[in-house]
Length: 346
Image (tube, rainbow, N blue to C red; front, side, top):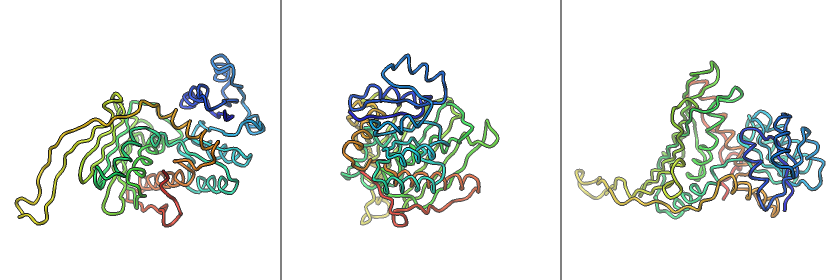
């Protein structure tokens, strides 16, 4: 088993705690948090895990090889930097950092020290996204011309990040993965409905090479919980609805508009309405798959699917979206594979 330490056990960190404590491949040795009430509860529920309010306990333990950072977003950079400098492999939750410069620094430190650096882009480990990527790679959907993603809920309002930074990393990572490319520009609009300077509703349009688009809408200000992704291919369409049961999460539609350039103008475009089919998926919790992947990367030294370079790219997209939101204009994206060496892993 691989010795692991966890930083942050509140909110999403509690899910990491449950997952790591029960993962056969991992030995969760430490759980660190500054909240004494959470540490007391942890001691009662997971007596084999040592609670601490000091990160040094994790970093000085030679049997703790990997550190999972699930604390609040503003702390990600500093904590991940300390862990990498201490020679630990790191899984840091999204967003990886709050600036692309800080994210790039973490990636540089990991490369220089030969450390594993993984970013918590959870949806990249969802069986649905992995199955959709196989369809795209196999050409069944044709060329993906448009992606629409909606992530909304009457959720917890945050004061240290807006809905774009909190929710959109998932959708950005899915769009990049399924387009197999990086966008060239971002245009965002939003509203601060509840808090004066924190946008709780944001919509973003990403332009990809070849006239392809991805539209992302995120919101905490919605009566319905929505987790939906639509892919529009030149051959078929696919819809992933994460709120549905496993046997209905992904539906592939043999629908579209066929264009025959040799036909007369009147008959050039025909509407196709074929069958629809549910895509079989393994019933695997994405967080469990993500945790297993991190432990495997620590053990084998292979590069994670969501590595530091891809994490840096997503932060660059978040930054560009924030700049667009503030300036009310389209913002070009400078973080492209040609310009930075970023790649689409996996």
